[in-house]
Length: 137
Image (cartoon, rainbow, N blue to C red; front, side, top):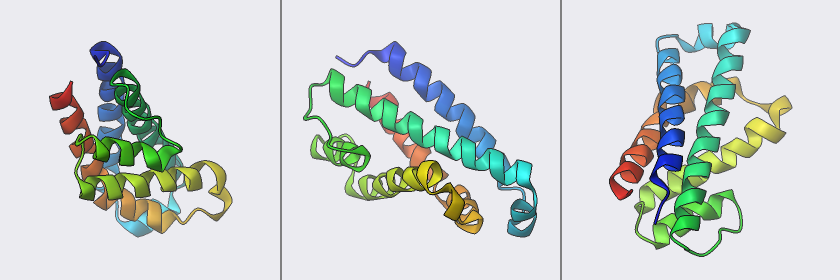
């Protein structure tokens, strides 16, 4: 059985990060790109948000004794295989897991416009994941 308190604590943190990232949407792209504190903190909060969904997914997989994911993208494939998330969300979260690697490892090549676009278009995937996991546990 999923350790509800462990997952809920991570969901609470994820909701906090999503709220912060949603506040970034009030800025236009030009302002976002020209303000180092804005884009820098946004990149960090996006990274932390992705870490939260990975952590939550790993907890569910471990507690339910599903097959061990081979990597971060595979984590969402395992959740899909076990009918926790649908195919669209699986694909979107796999992309998010891939983007996490860019945030962490390829930060010198980071495209700030892309980060801005992700914040403005993909936070709903994180919110949907939270909703599904809350219903699941």
